[in-house]
Each structure stands twice: as structure tokens, then as C-alpha cells.
Length: 170
Image (tube, rainbow, N blue to C red; front, side, top):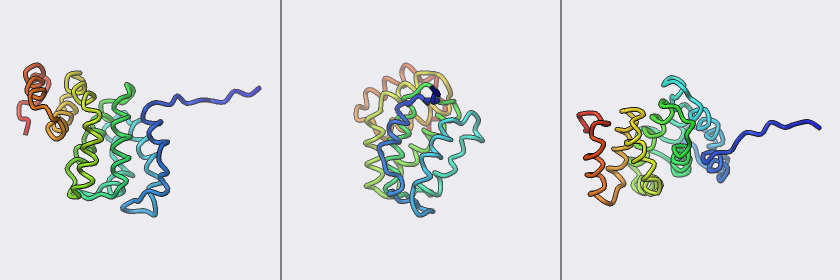
């Protein structure tokens, strides 16, 4: 009997499987069918060069413009942040992309992305508090500034984790 190689499914792969990417719009191609492969490649990145968002920038988002595909991509990115296998470079890029998504010029899509990020708020607090990388902590903090509904919680974060963030938070 032949053994099949079974790849473990994490939260990111679970979320990727929820969408018919061939029916979602792309800014540059006929459909977003290629986006899952780009997201998985990004999740597997180990260096900043490997973590370049090819297949995402110019396809899902271009500067501050996007199509509806940005919302499922935001969900996939947040699911990916829940995993423990992302490298620092990949986490940094996931957070950077999410920051772009919540600041889109298309208000409706930006609000939907904020809702996605808000649902994973504790992942962002953990990113800041982990001390893994100051750049990722800063991106997570900026996202929290966009989505946190309890200002006292953000103030408390700064009280306990200010040393984990760059001096200039702007």
C-alpha cells in the first residue's frame, strides 16, 4: 500500500480553502486564482527578499486601491499570524500588508479589513509583547491604533511594552 504525503493544514490553509479564488477579481489578471500560491510562498519566506509580496502587490492592492479580493486576503493573513511557523520576515510582511489594507482609499473595503483585523486583536497584542522583532511590533502597534476600540488597553500596552517599540512611533 502506497503512503501519500499529507501536508499539515494550519489556520491559514483552512482559510485559503474557503474561497473560490478563480471567481475573485484581480487588479492585473483575469482572476485572483494565483493569489493563494503567492500567499503560501509569502508564508514560507525566510528572508526579506523571499517575503516580497509578488502576486499580491499590483494584484490585490496597488498603492491604496484594491478590489474586493483584499478582504479574503486580509482574513488569510490574520489566520497566518495565528500560526507559529512564520519567519520574522514573513510576519513583518503580513503585518505591513494588513496596514495597507486598513488604510485603503476605498472606505468600504478599508472598514471591512479593519473588522477582519479587529477580530484578531489579541494576535496583534501578542506580536508587540513577544519581543520577536521591533519592526513587526511597530506594524502591529499601528494596526492596533487603527482598530482598537478601548483606548485604555492601548495605553496599558505602552506602559508595559514601550521598550519593545521604536522610540519614534509615528
